[in-house]
Length: 239
Image (cartoon, rainbow, N blue to C red; front, side, top):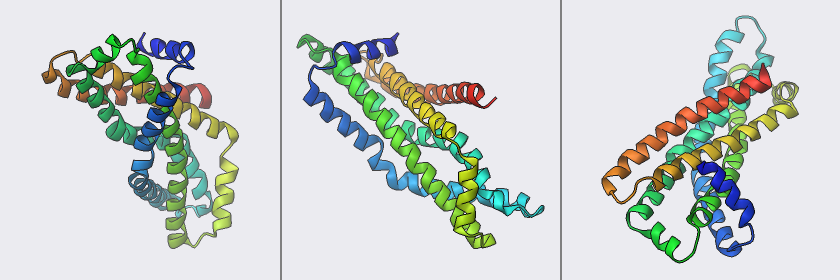
Protein backbone atom coordinates (compact mmCIF):
# COMPACT_ATOMS: atom_id res chain seq x y z
CA UNK A 1 0.00 0.00 0.00
CA UNK A 2 2.82 2.41 0.85
CA UNK A 3 4.64 1.63 -2.40
CA UNK A 4 1.38 2.15 -4.31
CA UNK A 5 0.99 5.58 -2.70
CA UNK A 6 4.48 6.55 -3.81
CA UNK A 7 3.90 5.41 -7.40
CA UNK A 8 0.51 7.14 -7.48
CA UNK A 9 2.08 10.37 -6.24
CA UNK A 10 4.81 10.19 -8.89
CA UNK A 11 2.25 10.22 -11.70
CA UNK A 12 -0.35 12.52 -10.17
CA UNK A 13 2.04 15.22 -8.96
CA UNK A 14 4.76 14.87 -11.56
CA UNK A 15 4.96 18.59 -12.31
CA UNK A 16 4.67 19.98 -8.79
CA UNK A 17 7.73 21.40 -7.04
CA UNK A 18 9.95 20.21 -9.85
CA UNK A 19 12.95 22.34 -8.87
CA UNK A 20 12.92 21.24 -5.22
CA UNK A 21 12.30 17.60 -6.10
CA UNK A 22 15.13 17.65 -8.65
CA UNK A 23 17.50 19.07 -6.05
CA UNK A 24 16.61 16.34 -3.54
CA UNK A 25 17.04 13.66 -6.23
CA UNK A 26 20.54 14.93 -7.05
CA UNK A 27 21.44 14.98 -3.35
CA UNK A 28 20.13 11.42 -2.93
CA UNK A 29 22.10 10.16 -5.94
CA UNK A 30 25.24 11.80 -4.56
CA UNK A 31 24.68 10.33 -1.10
CA UNK A 32 23.74 6.87 -2.36
CA UNK A 33 26.30 6.41 -5.12
CA UNK A 34 29.08 8.98 -5.27
CA UNK A 35 30.04 8.92 -1.59
CA UNK A 36 30.51 5.14 -1.57
CA UNK A 37 32.45 4.79 -4.83
CA UNK A 38 35.81 4.32 -3.13
CA UNK A 39 34.48 1.79 -0.63
CA UNK A 40 32.54 -0.16 -3.24
CA UNK A 41 35.51 -0.06 -5.61
CA UNK A 42 37.80 -1.62 -3.01
CA UNK A 43 35.17 -4.25 -2.18
CA UNK A 44 34.62 -4.98 -5.87
CA UNK A 45 38.31 -5.49 -6.63
CA UNK A 46 38.79 -7.69 -3.57
CA UNK A 47 35.67 -9.69 -4.31
CA UNK A 48 36.62 -10.27 -7.94
CA UNK A 49 40.09 -11.35 -6.84
CA UNK A 50 38.69 -13.76 -4.23
CA UNK A 51 36.35 -15.34 -6.75
CA UNK A 52 39.21 -15.91 -9.18
CA UNK A 53 41.48 -17.37 -6.47
CA UNK A 54 38.83 -19.87 -5.41
CA UNK A 55 37.82 -20.78 -8.96
CA UNK A 56 41.43 -21.01 -10.13
CA UNK A 57 42.21 -23.57 -7.46
CA UNK A 58 39.63 -25.85 -9.06
CA UNK A 59 40.17 -25.04 -12.73
CA UNK A 60 43.95 -25.44 -12.59
CA UNK A 61 43.42 -29.12 -11.89
CA UNK A 62 41.72 -29.63 -15.24
CA UNK A 63 43.61 -27.00 -17.22
CA UNK A 64 40.80 -24.70 -18.34
CA UNK A 65 41.89 -21.40 -16.85
CA UNK A 66 40.51 -19.68 -19.97
CA UNK A 67 37.07 -20.08 -18.40
CA UNK A 68 37.89 -17.66 -15.58
CA UNK A 69 35.97 -14.82 -17.22
CA UNK A 70 32.93 -17.05 -17.60
CA UNK A 71 32.90 -17.86 -13.90
CA UNK A 72 33.12 -14.18 -13.02
CA UNK A 73 30.08 -13.49 -15.18
CA UNK A 74 28.05 -16.24 -13.54
CA UNK A 75 29.08 -15.48 -9.96
CA UNK A 76 29.48 -11.69 -9.96
CA UNK A 77 27.36 -10.16 -12.71
CA UNK A 78 24.41 -12.51 -12.49
CA UNK A 79 24.06 -13.02 -8.76
CA UNK A 80 26.36 -11.62 -6.12
CA UNK A 81 27.16 -8.28 -7.77
CA UNK A 82 23.64 -6.84 -7.44
CA UNK A 83 23.32 -8.23 -3.91
CA UNK A 84 26.58 -6.78 -2.65
CA UNK A 85 25.84 -3.37 -4.18
CA UNK A 86 22.40 -3.45 -2.56
CA UNK A 87 23.85 -4.39 0.84
CA UNK A 88 26.18 -1.38 0.67
CA UNK A 89 23.17 0.83 -0.16
CA UNK A 90 21.27 -0.57 2.83
CA UNK A 91 24.13 -0.03 5.26
CA UNK A 92 25.08 3.43 4.03
CA UNK A 93 21.95 4.99 2.56
CA UNK A 94 18.97 2.93 3.72
CA UNK A 95 19.62 3.15 7.44
CA UNK A 96 20.42 6.86 7.11
CA UNK A 97 17.13 7.33 5.28
CA UNK A 98 15.18 5.56 8.01
CA UNK A 99 16.99 7.64 10.66
CA UNK A 100 16.33 10.93 8.87
CA UNK A 101 12.63 10.28 8.30
CA UNK A 102 12.30 8.89 11.82
CA UNK A 103 13.71 12.09 13.30
CA UNK A 104 11.47 14.15 11.02
CA UNK A 105 8.50 12.23 12.37
CA UNK A 106 9.53 12.49 16.03
CA UNK A 107 10.36 16.20 15.84
CA UNK A 108 7.12 17.03 14.04
CA UNK A 109 8.65 18.01 10.71
CA UNK A 110 6.35 15.66 8.81
CA UNK A 111 3.35 17.14 10.57
CA UNK A 112 4.56 20.65 9.78
CA UNK A 113 5.02 19.78 6.11
CA UNK A 114 1.49 18.38 5.98
CA UNK A 115 0.03 21.47 7.68
CA UNK A 116 1.58 23.64 4.97
CA UNK A 117 -0.38 21.70 2.38
CA UNK A 118 2.62 19.72 1.13
CA UNK A 119 2.26 15.99 0.63
CA UNK A 120 5.14 14.34 2.59
CA UNK A 121 5.05 11.39 0.21
CA UNK A 122 5.74 13.72 -2.71
CA UNK A 123 8.34 15.79 -0.86
CA UNK A 124 10.13 13.04 1.10
CA UNK A 125 9.48 9.65 -0.51
CA UNK A 126 9.35 10.29 -4.26
CA UNK A 127 12.76 11.99 -4.71
CA UNK A 128 14.45 9.43 -2.49
CA UNK A 129 12.97 6.56 -4.48
CA UNK A 130 14.05 8.06 -7.80
CA UNK A 131 17.49 9.10 -6.52
CA UNK A 132 18.22 5.77 -4.87
CA UNK A 133 17.15 3.86 -7.98
CA UNK A 134 19.46 5.90 -10.20
CA UNK A 135 22.29 5.51 -7.70
CA UNK A 136 21.71 1.77 -7.37
CA UNK A 137 21.91 1.19 -11.14
CA UNK A 138 25.12 3.23 -11.34
CA UNK A 139 26.65 1.35 -8.41
CA UNK A 140 25.81 -2.01 -10.01
CA UNK A 141 27.60 -1.06 -13.24
CA UNK A 142 30.57 0.29 -11.29
CA UNK A 143 30.82 -2.78 -9.06
CA UNK A 144 30.69 -5.20 -11.99
CA UNK A 145 33.45 -3.32 -13.82
CA UNK A 146 35.84 -3.13 -10.86
CA UNK A 147 35.12 -6.76 -9.92
CA UNK A 148 36.02 -7.87 -13.43
CA UNK A 149 39.13 -5.70 -13.26
CA UNK A 150 40.16 -7.23 -9.94
CA UNK A 151 39.51 -10.69 -11.31
CA UNK A 152 41.65 -10.05 -14.36
CA UNK A 153 44.56 -8.66 -12.32
CA UNK A 154 44.68 -11.77 -10.14
CA UNK A 155 44.23 -14.05 -13.17
CA UNK A 156 47.09 -12.33 -14.98
CA UNK A 157 49.38 -12.47 -11.96
CA UNK A 158 48.73 -16.15 -11.27
CA UNK A 159 48.29 -17.61 -14.73
CA UNK A 160 49.60 -15.01 -17.16
CA UNK A 161 46.32 -15.11 -19.06
CA UNK A 162 46.24 -12.39 -21.76
CA UNK A 163 43.74 -9.58 -21.35
CA UNK A 164 42.21 -10.41 -24.73
CA UNK A 165 41.58 -14.03 -23.73
CA UNK A 166 40.03 -12.96 -20.44
CA UNK A 167 37.77 -10.37 -22.06
CA UNK A 168 36.70 -12.79 -24.78
CA UNK A 169 35.72 -15.29 -22.10
CA UNK A 170 33.61 -12.61 -20.40
CA UNK A 171 32.08 -11.47 -23.69
CA UNK A 172 31.24 -15.04 -24.69
CA UNK A 173 29.46 -15.66 -21.40
CA UNK A 174 27.56 -12.43 -20.90
CA UNK A 175 24.48 -11.66 -22.91
CA UNK A 176 22.02 -8.81 -23.21
CA UNK A 177 19.67 -10.72 -20.92
CA UNK A 178 22.26 -10.72 -18.13
CA UNK A 179 22.60 -6.94 -18.34
CA UNK A 180 18.85 -6.40 -18.46
CA UNK A 181 18.25 -8.76 -15.54
CA UNK A 182 20.94 -6.94 -13.56
CA UNK A 183 19.16 -3.64 -14.14
CA UNK A 184 15.83 -5.22 -13.17
CA UNK A 185 17.33 -6.47 -9.92
CA UNK A 186 18.88 -3.07 -9.22
CA UNK A 187 15.55 -1.30 -9.72
CA UNK A 188 13.63 -3.75 -7.54
CA UNK A 189 16.35 -3.72 -4.88
CA UNK A 190 16.32 0.08 -4.75
CA UNK A 191 12.53 0.16 -4.54
CA UNK A 192 12.33 -2.33 -1.69
CA UNK A 193 15.12 -0.58 0.25
CA UNK A 194 13.49 2.84 -0.03
CA UNK A 195 9.96 1.62 0.68
CA UNK A 196 10.94 -0.38 3.77
CA UNK A 197 13.26 2.27 5.23
CA UNK A 198 10.84 5.14 4.66
CA UNK A 199 7.91 3.14 5.96
CA UNK A 200 9.77 2.27 9.16
CA UNK A 201 10.78 5.91 9.53
CA UNK A 202 7.23 7.17 9.11
CA UNK A 203 5.96 4.60 11.62
CA UNK A 204 8.19 5.82 14.46
CA UNK A 205 5.53 8.25 15.65
CA UNK A 206 6.32 10.64 18.47
CA UNK A 207 8.49 8.33 20.56
CA UNK A 208 12.20 8.72 19.91
CA UNK A 209 12.89 5.49 21.82
CA UNK A 210 11.28 3.59 18.93
CA UNK A 211 13.79 4.96 16.43
CA UNK A 212 16.73 2.54 17.05
CA UNK A 213 14.41 -0.46 16.76
CA UNK A 214 12.89 0.95 13.57
CA UNK A 215 16.35 1.38 12.03
CA UNK A 216 17.52 -2.13 12.87
CA UNK A 217 14.23 -3.63 11.75
CA UNK A 218 14.36 -1.76 8.46
CA UNK A 219 17.84 -3.16 7.76
CA UNK A 220 16.78 -6.73 8.54
CA UNK A 221 13.60 -6.42 6.49
CA UNK A 222 15.63 -5.06 3.57
CA UNK A 223 18.05 -8.00 3.70
CA UNK A 224 15.17 -10.46 3.67
CA UNK A 225 13.43 -8.58 0.87
CA UNK A 226 16.58 -8.58 -1.26
CA UNK A 227 16.98 -12.34 -0.97
CA UNK A 228 13.34 -12.95 -1.84
CA UNK A 229 13.42 -10.63 -4.86
CA UNK A 230 16.73 -12.09 -6.04
CA UNK A 231 15.37 -15.62 -5.76
CA UNK A 232 12.21 -14.75 -7.68
CA UNK A 233 13.95 -12.83 -10.49
CA UNK A 234 16.71 -15.43 -10.92
CA UNK A 235 14.18 -18.25 -10.85
CA UNK A 236 12.04 -16.60 -13.50
CA UNK A 237 14.83 -15.75 -15.95
CA UNK A 238 17.44 -18.47 -15.42
CA UNK A 239 15.43 -21.64 -14.82
